[in-house]
Length: 154
Image 1 (tube, one colour):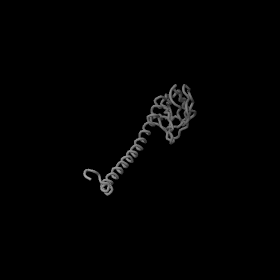
Image 2 (cartoon, one colour):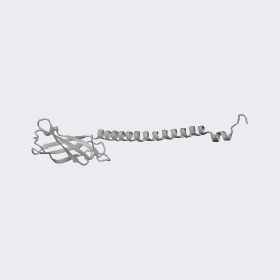
Image 3 (cartoon, rainbow, N blue to C red):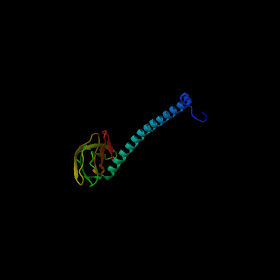
Image 4 (cartoon, one colour):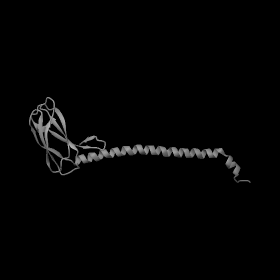
């Protein structure tokens, strides 16, 4: 038979079968590599969007110290007013300055502050040899707690 295919030649051709198997293995390895890269990229993108989400929530929250009164050398009373925007927060960090301009301590006050409400944070105690003269430098920073339990400061 001239010009036709001989079935015996095709069956005995190991070279043709080897090329097909090699091609299939390469295609399989490419799909595995794509899957690995996809998982890594997806985790990076997901983490980045979570960070952006918290940052956008922080932009909407407006807190201001409406009253700060020194009660003693180690206690201060603080009241905070919140604006009408933003998500519920998990708490605030109150930073208390010393009379020499340095920061004495950060006190964590957990809990949400409702919108358009002036809320007293209570009497805050702080340790160390500090002396407060002017409470106008007291600052408050809201924070969120992520799914893992980490505090994310605004």
